[in-house]
Every structure is written in structure tokens, then in C-alpha cells.
Length: 182
Image (cartoon, rainbow, N blue to C red):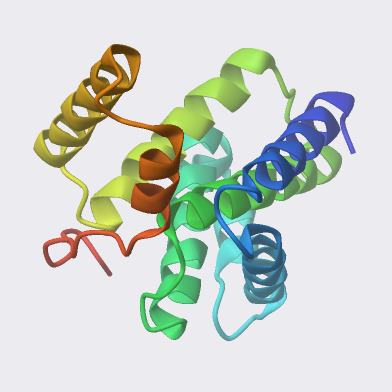
């Protein structure tokens, strides 16, 4: 595998391990989702990835092809879990699968892997996944504002570290029905 892709996978796994302290069982959930996604990638009945790659038109737009394909795989895994997989796990696992798809494209079709190509694909991947999960720009802006308020409250002493940890472990707010799911 390309050293850039290996580094991304290594850093993603390291970040998951780092977050394990605040989000119990994150590593196990992440590993299960990656394996499930890998199985779907190679399942001819589920994934049309090989057909997508064979189509020269798709190879000319690897950003959209890979982002949409990985998002679709993560959506299938998410739905098969009865929507119980935590959203950060989907993003982290999707990043790993994105690297694997890039590896296939590089080895099989000579795609040149660059930092810019990977960054654009990861950005598109996050955008498509968020749309599938029903996370709109408005919801995201609201959550960012809430996070800023928590930081201000923490700095002023209104919020203690144990309060933050407790909030992180609470169940996420239910999201609106997904848009764009296929």
C-alpha cells in the first residue's frame, strides 16, 4: 500500500484508540465496522465497486466514485446494525475503506495518489455520509455552537470535566429521517 494511505490508516486507528477512554468500546465497534465494510467491498451481490472501477468515466472522477461507494458501504453497515453504530465510528471506518479503495485504484489502474486527492475525497466522503445520516448544515452549525458554549462554560468554571464526559456518554439526540438514502 502507498505510504500516504498507510499513514492515514495508522493515524485513524491511533485516533480511535485515543478516543477509547472517553467512548467505551469504540475500538471494538470500529474494528467490527471495518471488517463488515471489507466484506461488503468484496461481496459481488452487494457491491458494484468492481463495475464502477471498470467504467473509465468513474476512474476519471475518483473523488466522487470513492466517496459515494464508501458512503454506500457505510450506509449498508449502519442499516444492518439497526442504526446503532455511532456516527464517529462510521467516519473512521469509512476513512479506512477509502484508503483501501485508493489502493485498488492505484495498483490496478495506476491512479496517482496525492495529498490533495485524498483530502478532496475525504471531504466529499464526509459530506455524503452526513447527508445520508440526515445531518444538515443547520444541525451541524447548532452542534458547533453548543460545543463552543461548552468550552466557554468549562473555561469559566461552570462546567467540570466529569460533566463533559457524562454528556459524551449519553445517547445522541435522535436525528431527523435521513435524506438522500438509496
